[in-house]
Image 1 (cartoon, rainbow, N blue to C red):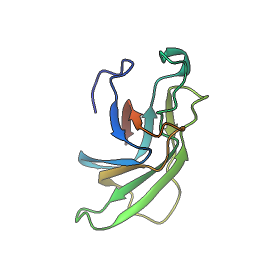
Image 2: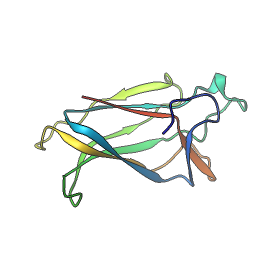
Image 3: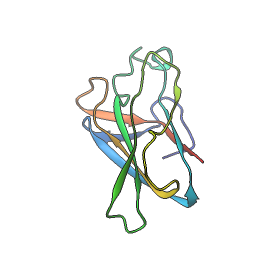
Length: 121
């Protein structure tokens, strides 16, 4: 994922589903932020390549167990930067490996774009 979030400079993946695994430098208690461009900034006036249904997982150190942290829908009618709270469940409070799984996008069959993932802790 790149620092530059100008239009078209995203992390694209083929189709409507994909995932990224991020290793953090330390174990942290988390919230997650996802960023995509707004309709007004898009050359086509639409952001159908934006992720829609997304899940975030904390991975145990051995990488074998995934713990669901949050399920959310990125709202293309909302702000470009959206923060999602974690669900309240009995899971370890800190992780150093996070998986972001995109289950669908806003109707672009060819590709999905993510401009920025921010992990706060």
